[in-house]
Length: 254
Image (tube, rainbow, N blue to C red; front, top):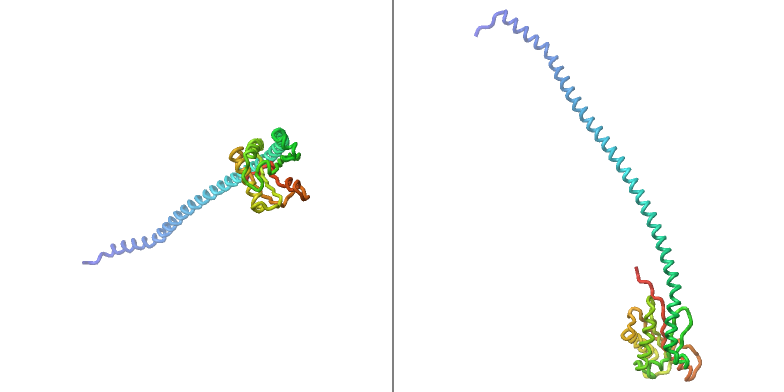
């Protein structure tokens, strides 16, 4: 291959020189382009961040407003609850006053019926009605039982059926049956006799007088709570007794 002419060499040399001169400009243009593209990307990223910050600020403001609304609602509900509790308390107090006023009237109505039912026994001193706020009926043991026995006599059953039905008319009350002896052994101890007699009366009031069982209480007191302390047949007869006491029933557990 023959080498080129001197003119051709000069042209090629000139072209290379121009290319070397333009190379820095191309590099500069490329760098500027890269910088411009990076700046655009950075600007776009910053705009997105600013937008996100604004969104979070709006959400925070809305959350604060919602919290304020909830706090206001809570305070309003608390005030209403206090008002309702106060109103309920006043209502309960009113009901209590009404019941307290109605209780003596109910007791007096039952007491009047028992006076008629026990007229003869009251005159003979075999029954007693205690004139107190609560209704108390006391029956001699000979009206209900044979001496030393714990089984009701036919006359005792009939008396308890009629009298118990009247006691059962007073709702919201317990009928507490307490049996007492005179301490003289009669085939069983005072505790056994009094407790067995009280249970016998309670069973009869439930089965025949239809008093609800949850309203009945049986207590055997033996000879340890006499009403008279003297000795002798009349004193012992007075102490042998069965008491029926009408008491307000306790409130049920919440």
